[in-house]
Amino acid sequence: MEPPSTSPNPLGTVHKRKRELGHQMCEKIKVDSRARMALQYRTARSSDVIWCELFYADDFPDNSQCETARDGQWYTFPACCNGAYNCLGGGVWDMMLCPAEFVYNSQTDECAPYTGSECPPRDPIPGDVPSTEEPAASCGTVRNGRLPYAPDCTKYILCVQEVASLLDCPDGYVFYVPFLMCLPGVVEQCTLYQTG
Figure 1: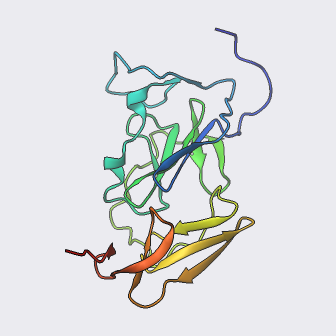
Figure 2: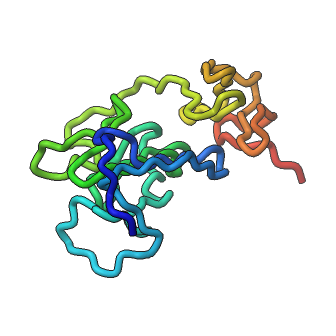
């Protein structure tokens, strides 16, 4: 294994994985000199693991952790404070891996030094009132095309040269993700009409 490089990138993106409409799309992996990944399973885990120098396959969240999560909200990995992910439509949408003792800052889209004494909270703080404001339409990494708008299946996001527009399906139609188009459906259940 090569020794870590000394190139400056302390606040840079380490690894970013995008999941788009059920099809996985991986961006180019950028590795900070202090972060490493492993695709095997962690054989020994200490109960007080906070920072992961090496990310193992079982450190990553799975879609079950997004079943009740709010779309677009960032959470820390279950075992590693320096890993973060967000959810869309009940599945993991985006991930960020930072070097040990750095955490992902979703406001700046960077890994920043962590100055606290414990792992950032994974779940909302008790007493916090969730926002009722609908999230803004975003194209993410999609340059041109249609995307689902998670809060409302009667709407979709149209991306034209990375500019997002939120559009409505016609009355009685829902946005059907496999075909990326509005089709007649049961709006209350966000499903297509069934025949037979």
